[in-house]
Image (cartoon, rainbow, N blue to C red; front, side, top):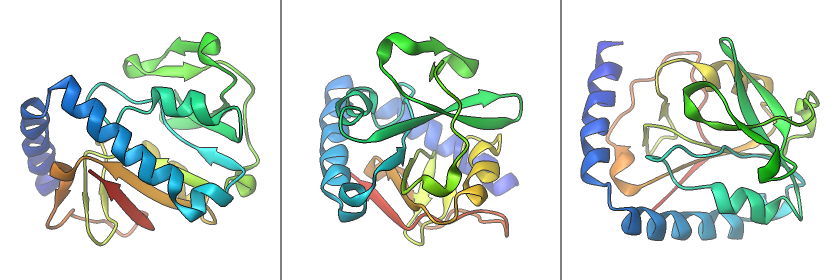
Length: 178
């Protein structure tokens, strides 16, 4: 656990150095272009994305863009868990826990129908291990969706030599970065 805390601190420092919104927007656009060109994304009908925080790959326009063609789901923090709700448009977003914009629409419980998941992270390694923010939300959610193709999306500086992994951690199938 101590190694994870130290890695989170190191990544927080790197994120402050990577604060140019122009750079972040440009890199986000490149990452998301690679994501939408991915064969697993193209084939997917039901996709779990996330509505980004300021220090993450910016997904806001991407969520809106693809909601016209695919069923887009977003997580909602409820207590110690993530619920999944159907994204219906920016007008149905409300600021939730941690200042994240979250959908207020219909609850989605058919986890077996989810084909593809884009997962945020503080850091990733080349083996697909992911370091989250430390609350374990995705650690509890991802085991319920084993069939979905899981892609971590991040900036290049978020790739590290090794993310300390626990037996319960779910590896990403792939990492897309810029």
